[in-house]
Amino acid sequence: MSIPPNQGHHVKRIVLPSGKTIDVVYFSDAVSEIASPRPAGLPQPSGPERDGDPDLHICRECASELVYPTSWEESRARQWRVTLRCPDCEWTLDAVFGQDIVDRFDEVLDLGTEALMNDLRQLTCANMAEEIDRFVSALDAGAIMPMDF
Image 1 (cartoon, rainbow, N blue to C red):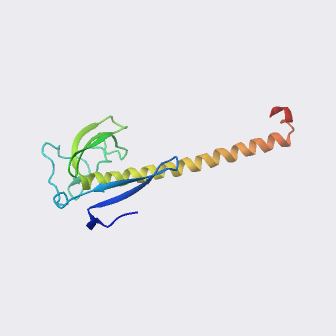
Image 2 (cartoon, helix red, strand yellow):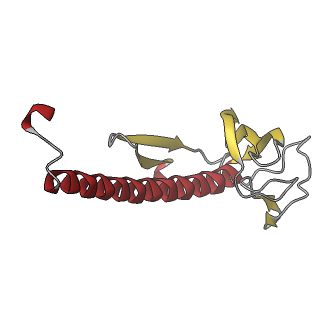
Image 3 (tube, rainbow, N blue to C red):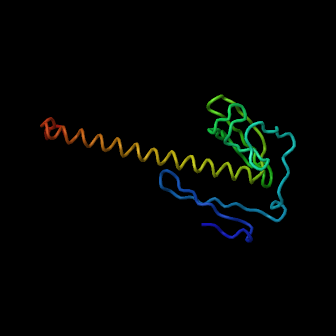
């Protein structure tokens, strides 16, 4: 559910693994809609980039696409302080990024979460099917008795 951007805010609905749904409301004003320049002191990325902005999910040391945030907090309007970590080479970075870059990173993280949840569902189904087959085999062999329950 999204509210048109001309009303000054938009809503992002997030479904948690428990099944609960939360709505995150993002507010903006006319000043913050202007593209903000690269924050002072932000290291120049050495890894892959898109349109001159860093792809936060890609490690600047080893080019792994598994970089994830260990923390993030709003720094200023449409600016976020994010601490990143690469699980492959242990590279870390603490820096401030603009809203557009963080939004793109959030989308990549959402896609990764979705892929992990799909893999978990498939693994759960495969494990359950194997367990059912073992149970049926035990029933057929007479290895399960009423006193087992």
